[in-house]
Length: 314
Image (cartoon, rainbow, N blue to C red):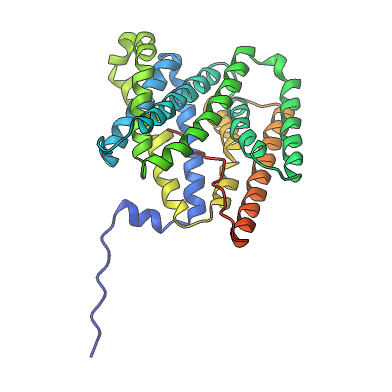
């Protein structure tokens, strides 16, 4: 007697994503984020950076609120203060890096910005080996300094400020995660970011914001930069160790440089590529050694601290 066939699970985006190895999900997420940045930079000729940032935040906020449906009740005053601060950091991080994109190559801007989370990882550690990673990152900064004469100083300043904002975003992200479940904190923070960026975004965008073509491109930027990577990374993290995820995310500067070359025709000098490589190796090394330390503390019975690097960007 034949056994009844097991019914097949109906096709869905979730089942399709689960059929893909998690490493590839992270790689697609990285490419998606940087492609979104490249599309955004192409919009700057018709829409100022502040308007593009506002459209991006608006898109991600609307989609996140619809998908997550965060609850407004049972929240303390401290909860709201934390999530508002998170939203401010989110808005400033995006505004500053888009201002940098408008002035210097995409790969260089992302490399400088990446020093923010790297600094948190290194400063929060007491391991001697992190001095090596700090020195390597510093070497990358020196290499960038050798080429700084050919770049807009204001663009470099905006990228540095974006790194500071990203560091603040990471710290506030951790605090928000302790008070809000799932993606509800990110949804609230995105709404805060939309409100904060609305005056500058609407004032600078003006009548161009009524152009349906530009609105469509703004939607594409929001989906590529926020919704797609968030969904893919969430699925990948369910099936891979956080240390592997962190090492893979260290490829962001290289991906930004490649996207800048392909989409925008931005050529980097050998010294600039060297700087990008230094920051990537420093970030990957810091992530791996911090993961080993957390694992050792866990096996020893002491609670392992949460990783300082949080690459989820709204």
